[in-house]
Length: 227
Image (cartoon, rainbow, N blue to C red):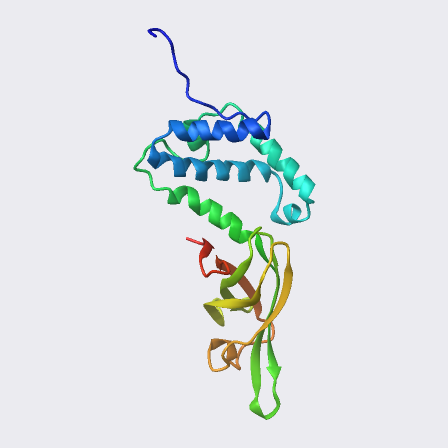
């Protein structure tokens, strides 16, 4: 067999059947420690290429057929790439000592951005003789593709021109019945009136911003978390 060269297996993006078979061949050619990194890198590349030029809002407005067309084109764009080339293009290095967190972080950030806080408002609700109570009104849409049972937020309440926020606090909200993929819900949250949200000095011009830090599934497992 002298003189015969063996090329690394590559992705066949010509049709779904050959595509899946070619991925199995690539995984079989990699060291065990590289297989998981390859799968993560492949997912990152497919996500990046299927969403190229589109905002999260634009993605959420696409039909299932349009999303599948984007996914097909993304797979085709990887035709002819070897396992090591996939790792390199996704920002990985074919170095077994490299920490895979460098690849996981942008994926987590992208998926968290798909849990969209469409509206966030803060107000004080008058409750007669018991005084006023803080209320956080939220409207959210789950575009992650996964059911979500708990959301961890960072809420910042700040007035224009004021250097120090009235409130800068992290908290979580457990969703009754979960929020399914594509579903939009409106919530009225009631923070502790004895805490910073109940400060009677908060001015009427204070604006609320919400950042999604972590999402948990119905089993209590973390789906994605901001580093």
